Image (cartoon, rainbow, N blue to C red; front, side):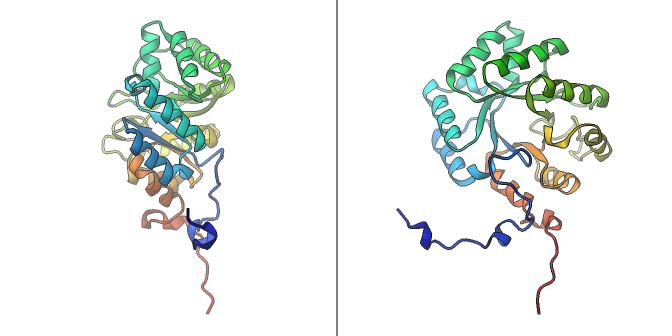
Length: 271
């Protein structure tokens, strides 16, 4: 085993030149990675190389149901050891609600050893009272609750008053963060127009009315990540990040890519 005392490291000012990036566990600047079917070896590689930069991993949509139980339990174990909250995607819960199996779903999530759960209504219609009931039930089982706002259908827009009410109510009932829907495509839904460009006026209005730290913006594209970092700062919470892009996003957060080098304070070089 190599002696780390003899291993040179980058000066702190070069490794994190913004001077603002917090280490884990952190309450802001969260990164959520979406896992759509990584095998055990690929999952281990992800955590070994990028685990320090990932806060939560979502098993996309209903993929949690398709793993062999031994593989799923190993992913949960590895995530816990890395200080990462692994949770099933909200679409899986929506399917359970549609089938009248929400209680069995929560109990199974807890039995597997998941630390968290996502509650959403991107596909189904969920009455506000039932949404709050689901949040309280999950929290009552000791699960960390992440909710999501917004519909997945193409052309769906944010209803600002409804969004604000939903976020504040979800947090009141026990949600840690509320994800703003952006889908995997990052286009034609929520804060993104049909070309994937951000609707900045809507974003600014949302953060004017809601504490930014409780929001997580789905931003699957590099240009969206860079734009939101420059618009809202590197403490913005970002999600639906591809596993292969986790370190690249961290470089964006730290101003270590040309797209976001403006985040680094400019200092005069001594003569």
